Image (cartoon, rainbow, N blue to C red):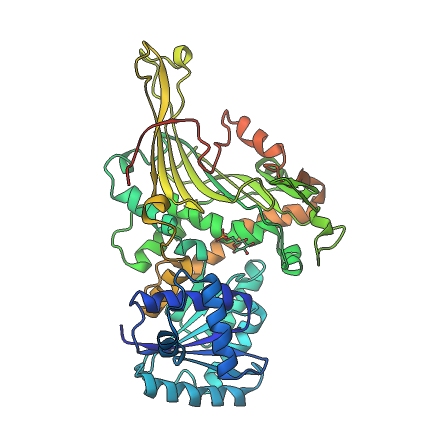
Length: 505
Ligand code: BG6
């Protein structure tokens, strides 16, 4: 690793506090960040280095996987951090920033490498990029990379404009667009499980797979992000990015090489093959949108979405979405992908379920034994693991077939101390590996797909169904699968198989 200066814009914000600074500390403690690094925290408010480092220590102690050991150790780490108040509209401030960056480059021998991390509202991306260039920050002997957070635009048009602004300053290869779901251990594991196992890849197609279900349930409401969320909704906040990215990982062809561009090329092909919704009727038939009303979750009363802070009391924004999606290519012709996500659902859980087709009628006729389909489940979050459900003879009982399960609980074995998504992503950006960042064409195809849904909803706001907080969303989401002869499989370890054999720790 050849070192870098990290410039964090939005350093006093929530993301920096909860995710970025703790990630730096874990990387440092685990030896992935050697002494050749510096971090400059940037935000409008004035702050001394000492105050900044104190906040840093608090955020690490509260949110990092590793706690600060002792003062000596801390001082060694903290001296890599500096704070500079910056008005992002003032190019002189950027010149001053350039001087500080050069000094830190010399002090920590970072080879002129610079990583600009914009933990800011996207409206500011264009200005900051422009001023980075005008302030001389791109004139360096090493590499420079730009890391940006979602949302990347509001629709295809605004995303295109945003992209144009960035591309006036940065090359595509130097832009790292974060989708933190791609940094999750089990999302990265999808391709390994698929492509490194003889008993999955041959079956990974429409001959053997009945459907694929992706659930991303959350118990939280909109917390203090009502203003942003009410403008965005579940479609833009979750489906355009996290859900379609997981779908692409499940559906993509094996890449010819494990090179970032080859993998991203395969994902783009999937996104390009999504069957577009051609009319509002098609959207009504295939997409369910919901909004939570008051209800109870874990024994607590929860307010309705419309009563949340900063939310329009007459809002028609969706907090829930379920959809039937098809990937129109040779491998997936006829296989529905069902996706669903929602706020204030009964559990926090992200799981991907592959439901296999039933065996042909044979001596174990389904009608005699009520055979359950085989399931392969990727448990992404918060429990991490892989679950496989199959049929077997009930021990001791004559002629009784039951579902059994192999349950590999990764989080139970490795512990919950596996690296956080942001640790992986910062580490990857630092070493120039863009595999788990989204390329512009992926973002554009995803927007194109969801724009058709948003447009239909705009024309037909009557589609919005309500569900009580603490429930699994509108009934229409169950009807969506029932119409195809399927059902949503329970998530969060509540599958039906009796765990007869489980991996041992
Ligand atoms: C973010 C969304 O991208 O992902 C949030 O903006 C959501 O609304 C969050 O809560 C979920 O992430 P995770 O990692 O907690 O499942």
